[in-house]
Image 1 (cartoon, one colour):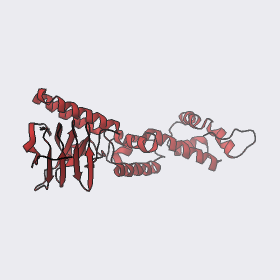
Image 2 (cartoon, rainbow, N blue to C red):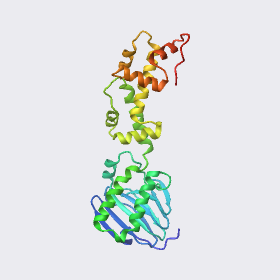
Image 3 (cartoon, rainbow, N blue to C red):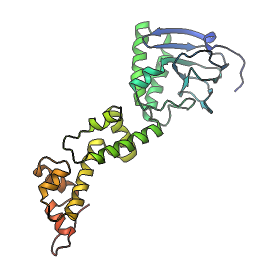
Length: 282
């Protein structure tokens, strides 16, 4: 990329700026520029750099990435960064980092990472930013406020932070194991204990384990019940069902048959190797 213009700060390249609600939209001029920023004070902002035409190179936190047309990246205002842009159209959206983190805990906010191509939710965000950039001249301040709100909500569709997501899922699984026998246990309780929404934890569970919180709790209860049926032949089925978190024996039997393709009593007989009984299902 050949740089023909040096602009510091990037506000020198502004075509339009609209401050609205929690955020600020900035349409940058088409001239190439390069910015090297060493923040003098903390502002607590998360910047979204979107490219509609040309290319951009962003470096921050030991990472460097190339943005092609239709892509975007996060940049945090309170850490040093470098931003180089070739000739083309681009948009900058500033949002309070704390607002984004509170609204969407667990979203991957690693800076200087190219986004908008591989992840479906990030493609949606990229499309919104691209449309805002293209319609900039015709958008009223009220339109801009609505656009910022839409983007802020859409950020929740972006990818999850890998390490944080794995840690929360691991903690959730451990909490579930401890409380399987509690019939009052609800998926929302597990999410609340992790300090996140059920929707977020369901998404993380689906990505990593292929099942929702409710489905995992039900499966683990049934698996524990199956283990106890085989290991405790003298315990009544209703006693085992109760210990595994099922209030109603009939409901337990229906779920057990649906999962193992046999009844609890038949499963126990087969586990004990009694002649003439079908072996336990899946």
